[in-house]
Length: 115
Length: 118
Image 1 (cartoon, chains in turn cyan, blue):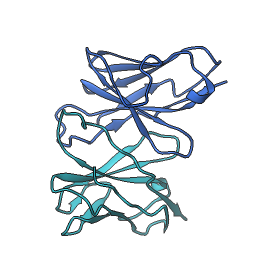
Image 2: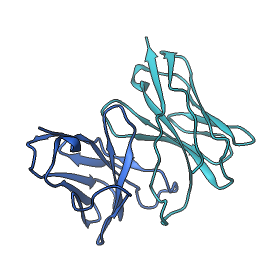
Image 3: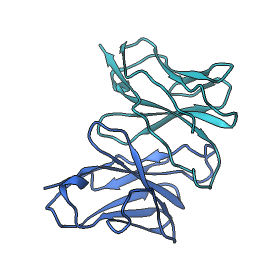
């Protein structure tokens, strides 16, 4: 799996956009970028994923650079409930096989949203 | 949406006893479920892959005789920590991928079960 690098922590004011970066300079052509988050003492929650095009859903937007070596997760209007650890994970997307479902969670970025 | 339920959410037990944690997919069937473990201030680590109707696949370094996994139906996997010791105290989280969903690594996680062994 491609290694990812994320800042240890970030702060964001409530109501403002939170932009969480992730570097994955060794990403392969068939690897996707996934974002999960974990609110304190809960299980992780899937946010969004993409291959090379920018993606948007009801939770967030994912911007992937043209060379795919980095990406940014954008929470457009952060709320206090978005305070969590955010994980950027790079994986191939193949059902079955030995790597299926084996998500490697790094240390992630601790996002603190303050009033 | 897909929901994974874990029970119990918290359990305290004495050293040497066994503890069973249940993981249920409430509104979908899951032929495969995944068990993760998270120690305080650390990230999640995959312990094992639970396969319906067959033996679980354990990650390197995880004792299969200590962490018994049973996946008897398409909606239920159980993790039994046998002869638990204080070092087994951890946050255990299960996950599953809903059938028919397009993302191979889009998993739904349970809320986790916090085990404290005295």
